[in-house]
Image (tube, rainbow, N blue to C red; front, side, top):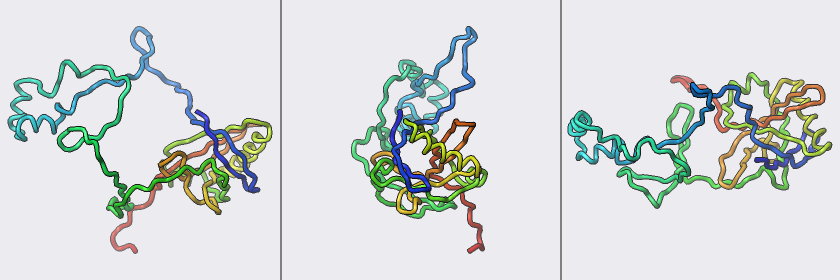
Length: 239
């Protein structure tokens, strides 16, 4: 599915550009012994009553009673349900009693690099900023590809595409600069282009990096998204 992003270059000239998922074609696929192509399907593994917690509750929380039942029969398996194919599903929340919860309170947990909890807060509701009047900025912060790949974990990537001769020149020039420098370019919101990108209502903030490649008059401009930075774990004695 194609969407629009308002982006500017180093000359502060901007344009609304189409971007879409960058999904390489699958080179390997599975097939049966009859050479029929295999497909992934979702099936029911079990129901809440047959989970570890549900079974313990059924046997009064006594592990020994549950162990005896597992030896004598198969209470963890429902032959009428297990293995059935799933079609459409809906996400629900359950409590400790394995029953559906209809009223919940969301919390956001912020952790330090060493894994300890820094802050517990109400989730921030963020509004999208990738296609508003203020374009995303070409920050001018180049980062060598090797350095970027060892510093950030990239969660998603999108391909930026032209829709006219003008947008072709616009994107090709970006790709050419990045290709020649063998670097990624940080783009972002705000005056200096250092702010995060939010793609949908209430979405997560991402850092965005552009990668460009060219081959003759052809180009490939990819936008890599990251919301996780790799940092060394502080050791005792270091300030």
